[in-house]
Amino acid sequence: MKRIDFRFLLAFSILLGCKSSSSVEEIASEISILEVVSDSTREEIPISQGDQEKIEQLINLKIQDLFKEDLAGDFLDSLDRRYMYYQVDLNEDGISEILVGMTGPFFCGSGGCTLLLLSDQGDFITQFSVVKYPVFVDNESSNGWKNLILYSGGKNRLVQFDGETYPSNPSILPVFERDVDNLKKLLDWEGSETYFF
Image 1: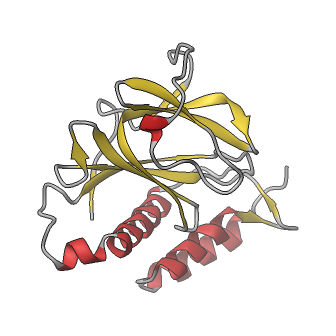
Image 2: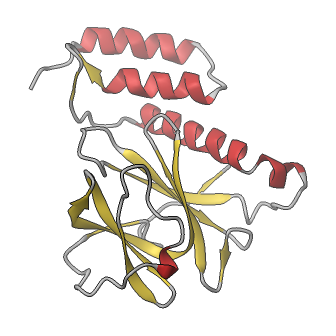
């Protein structure tokens, strides 16, 4: 595993701190550069608070873009404009995808809430409907991506990547028959902080 030259990282951080980013592409590029190590090799890097703020900015911009018509129509009040998120590497490429759990009455109903899956660059991968949190990540994979276990339609459902995306409506998918207690649990109401967009 190669090491990062911290002088470069420090200089880069100082440059980033001096500029204001307002687009998804700029913020995503800054996050990506922080992950890249020489010779196109990537490694897990502990995320600092500054990096965490950039990720939150990226999520906020993506949510605002996805729901711009609802925002423009004043359909979302402050209670609706909340989410929680978790970064997890679902395709085992060393780069974390971002699960965004929408909260509030606009995004949640009796059947569950809207869940978004974004790439590390903020690219839209899947929008899931009617999901109750938490989300579980299975130890098994389909088409190179970890299976997700989503509670929908009164049962845990097995959600498998089809080569391009995950199915968006888990309530019609097969029931996950195994126990979820030993699986990685994400977006748990009890342990997840909520953010505003």
